[in-house]
Picture 1 (cartoon, rainbow, N blue to C red):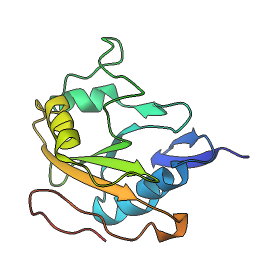
Picture 2 (picture 1 turned 90 degrees about the horizontal axis):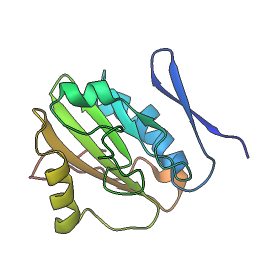
Picture 3 (picture 1 turned 135 degrees about the horizontal axis):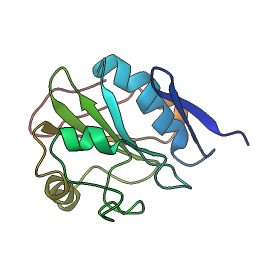
Length: 151
């Protein structure tokens, strides 16, 4: 199978391994983000097989979050969500969980994300995307704390 090409910025493309949730990750970046976060900057992308396909350490530092690869603070198998986008216009840090089978972000997971990103100067927005069929990517997108519905 061919790797999935994903344009994350003008002149910058990454590839994701085929299968798993990576088709949905691609759709989040190429369809959802431009529609709901025009001009948003991709900070991090997890790959099903490689675990961390992209990480912009400089952008995350500008937002005030002390996560670095060198310090070993990022566990590619662990806590960071599938896609992180900085919605620069609203100064929101969009934390997107992408999965093929798990339920919504529960209180424990939300607490983990709040702790990991507690120093962010940007407001935190939690988005959960679950799918059973790749073609259904447009279904419900939500923001916690009574925020707007996406989708």
